[in-house]
Image 1 (tube, rainbow, N blue to C red):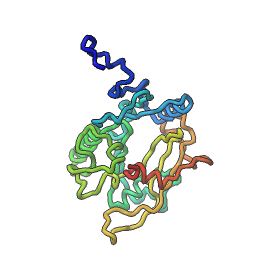
Image 2: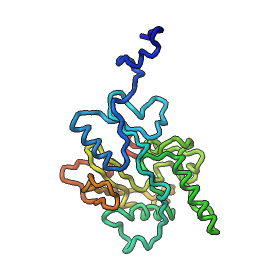
Image 3: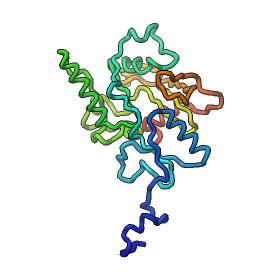
Image 4: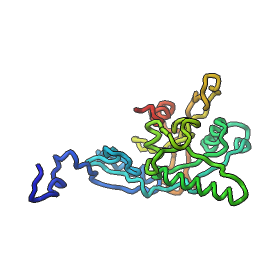
Length: 261
């Protein structure tokens, strides 16, 4: 109950449903920090919540009594994350075993010659600025604006929460280029079982005869990082997931691109 003599008493009232505050907060910087947090939570039976920009009116980016992973300080990839693709990168036309060229292979299949890597702590404001700076650099060299990214209407929206809900884009070409889920090439994430995975489509077919502007995915492949404690990304090692891993990457690809609800 509200106490007029002590207007902030509700802060200490654990029965208050509006008291939606986590018990602990961690600021991961690299994926290994997230892996360590997941393993700690599993060992101590602690529930986890995740917050990027907190762009959610109902407060779904945090939960009472949880270990909150606040991604604000996570490595930002977009400032240097634009990759120009060329068929020569494919070597013999196949996708490398570590999936390193898979994003370019799929991007070229979509008739797009570049992609941008975005970190788990970035929002659309940061991504748009990175693309703008890259375009201005092209212009200064005598070229034209080359890059365009389909994203959310508000800069505070995170690409990941946005994509999980399908990725509507009324102001950056969504009607022309497709939903946000149509733009995703590859995903890296740390799963509830503590595995750091990388996965994406490796088999697709032309679906233009059916009226689609993007290839139809017919197979998704994924890898697990075999040295999750290594913080230096240059030393990351990707390998087959261990026996008993229990995750179907085809189902996971569907789930994290809007199919999961």
